[in-house]
Image 1 (cartoon, rainbow, N blue to C red):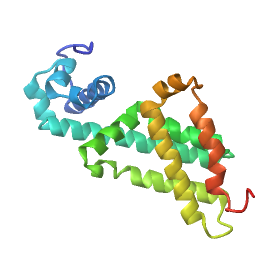
Image 2 (cartoon, rainbow, N blue to C red):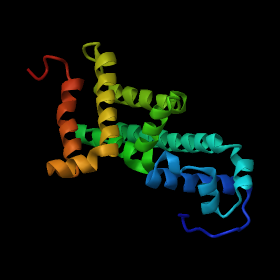
Image 3 (cartoon, helix red, strand yellow):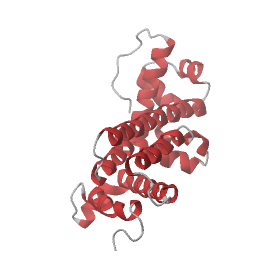
Image 4 (cartoon, rainbow, N blue to C red):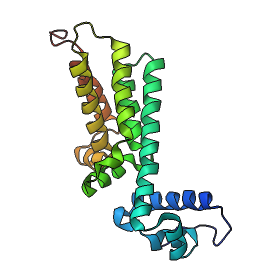
Length: 204
């Protein structure tokens, strides 16, 4: 079933690519990776299959462009989390919320799952700088009094990011099964986070 859109209007090449990627993202989020086909997106856009091939070369080209666009959005969301951490007091829950929001926005978690299942992790490479920046932002805020931040802080970021990924993918049905509130997972992660960030004997 096609997504409603104005049909057969004139677009510049850049406009056509951008609109095609918007429809492709909608297809991914509502129908999964198998729904992201040249024919389906061409129908949504109101152009021919051949016209879409002209812009992307192939179905793989369309999918790669979609991945690049969505990964860029994820990187920007993580950058926003970094800015928030640098300017706010950065209580654990604020940090957790920032990263959880980054994975929830725009279908980033579904995209990451798709990339992992395809086995080509190179598409996630642009996220590296954002994740590294998040580690550094936490280190700048907390300091490194015992010289162990280089191990504790990356572990904390891994903990938050993996939890945020899982929450975005399967959190809602699991919460319903367990009769939990929408923010329960975030609260739990925020409560555990100090154990990663503090010195081993700080909570003793």
